[in-house]
Amino acid sequence: MVRRIIKSEIRKNYLFNKYVIITPGRTSRPRDIKEETVIKRTSVCPFCSENSHKKNIIDQIDTNGKWNVECINNIFPAVTLHNDQAYGQQEVIIETKHHSKELANLDAGHIENVLRMYARRTKVISQNKNIDYVLCFKNQGSKAGASIVHAHSQVFATKVLPPDIQEEIALVQAYQTKHGSCVYCDILKKELKTSRKIYEDKFIAAIAPYASEYHYEAWIFTKRHLDNITLLNAQEFKSFAKVYKLILNKLHALDLSFNGFLHQVVSNRKQHFYMKIQPRASVWAGVELGSGMVINSMSPEEAAAYYRTK
Ligand SMILES: [Zn+2]
Ligand SMILES: [Zn+2]
Image 1 (cartoon, rainbow, N blue to C red):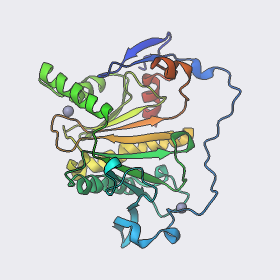
Image 2 (cartoon, rainbow, N blue to C red):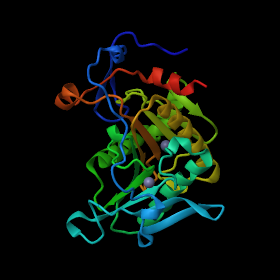
Image 3 (spheres, rainbow, N blue to C red):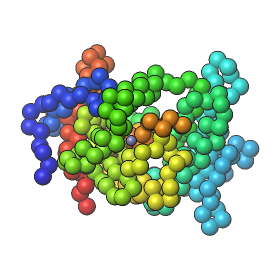
C-alpha cells in the first residue's frame, strides 16, 4: 500500500539540518512556460572516436576486443595537477562509442562497465597522496547541466575535501559515537520496510529518501558497509548495474534530466558508500533560494511506487 500524502508535510533530512516541504498535487499547477530538455548538436562531437586524440586516452574497458567504455582527459579542466592554486584532476568517461545512445539504452553488463570504470579511476587517482576527494558523477540532459549529448560521466578530484562532504562525514561520525552503528546501515534497515523502498536484493538496495529534494530522487546503497566503489565485489557490481538500469529506464520514460553521483570517501571505514540520483523536473525558485527550504511536489512514496511498477 502506498501511503498517499494528502496535506503538505515538512520533513527533515536524515542527517543535515535541512528541510523539505512535500506538497503533493502541485505538479498539476498550470504552467505557461514550456520546458526544453533536448540538447541540439551544434558542433563536432569531441567524444566520438573519429574526433578524439589518442594521446588523451587514459583507460579503456573492452568487450570482444573493442572498447565500450573509455576514459579521457578533460580538455577544459577547472582544476589540474599543475596548478597549486586549484589542484586536482578531471577526466571524462565516455560511456559508449555510439553518439546518440543514452546510458539507459545500454544493457546492464555495459552499465556495469561504466561503474567499473568509476572504480578504476577512483583507485588510480586516490593513490595520489595530495588528492583527498574523488567525485564520479553524471549530468544527463540540459536541465542537469550537460553540454554534450554523447553519453558520458565525469571524474572530479581535488586536494580539498568540500565542506558539504566534511559536514556529512562529521555527522556520520557523530551518529556512530552516539549509537554505535552506521547511520546509513540503520536508515536502510528502516526504509526497506516502508513504501519508500524501490528495490532490494542480497547485495544492493535502493530507496526514495524520506526528505527527497527532487522529484523521483533515488539513492542506491551496497548492503555491505563499504566506504567506496573500489571495494565492490562482482555480485555487488552486477546488482548495482541492474538497479541503476531500472532507475535509468524509468527516468528515460519520463524524459527527465538528472544528476547522478557517488558519495564516497576513500579509506574512512566509518563512511557508507552510496549513489544519489537527483532528477531535475522542477526548477528551484524564490522559496528554495531565499529560505533554503525546498518544495517538492512529488512525495518519495509516490516516486518509489513508480519505480516499483513493472
Ligand atoms: Zn559523439
Ligand atoms: Zn553503513
